[in-house]
Image (cartoon, rainbow, N blue to C red):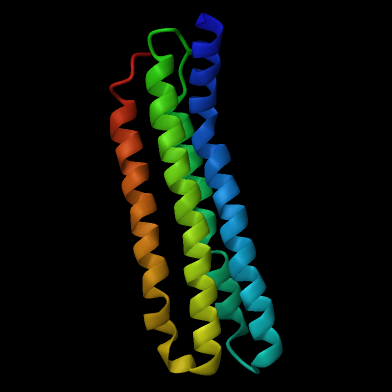
Amino acid sequence: MDNLIIALGWAGLYGPMALGAIGSIIGCALAGQAACGALLETETGHGRYVGIAAMPSSQTIYGIVVMFSLNREVTIENAPGLFAVGILAGLALLFSAWRQGQCCASAINVSKIKPEIFGMSVAPAAIVEGFAVFAFIFALVISAGIPA
């Protein structure tokens, strides 16, 4: 049983980076596909389409920082805390990147038809980013209370 608890602690330690990266992959792929479609249908604005397609990649960075803040020797005493904080923060990052990619794809699709609303169309993606930041900050604060 102790080995399982230790293994879950290790999963929690590396989970934020891995899950954040998985979410970023999904989100960037969704937005990137929309950007590729927009490149074929528009004559200008290509740089902003490609730029917004990269927006979900920030969750990988948040995951890496959380992973470093959780980095410590994994023991029976701290493994449950590492698992809980790491996996829950990682899942929040995964889903926020995924949904942010969908918001970015929608912004690309609408702004290729009506370019003047590009700034407003990116607002939902920025709101979703805010939730990733909340999970990020929460994980950093809580990680300080997990025994070393």
